[in-house]
Image (tube, rainbow, N blue to C red; front, side):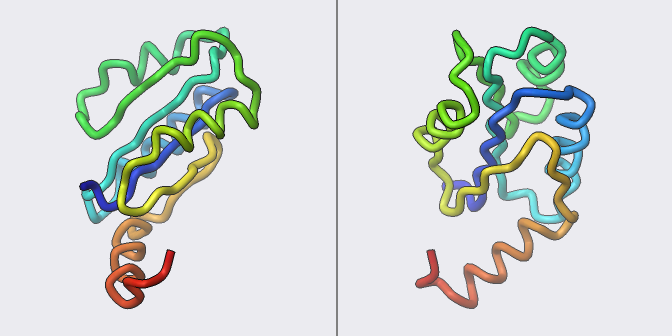
Length: 113
């Protein structure tokens, strides 16, 4: 099982999404997966960029209709399957040692949820 599963409910600025995804790709610990869930945004750029991404850890899904913020977050919750799950905003940027820090915290406190 993947250590960290990032779920990114997306609706918005594709340029900000690119920055968020780049920060995941820059992780020093590579034990992660990223699922981008496009909430039926009218601009196809996110799908064009991430649907067939060269990094197999990135999965792009597109809702068949707009679910709204709460609905898309709930949909993302149903997809979570990592040992640790992180909801990442499409305008968030991770430090390069985020996953490594999550691993350390998990090892030091295995009973924590």
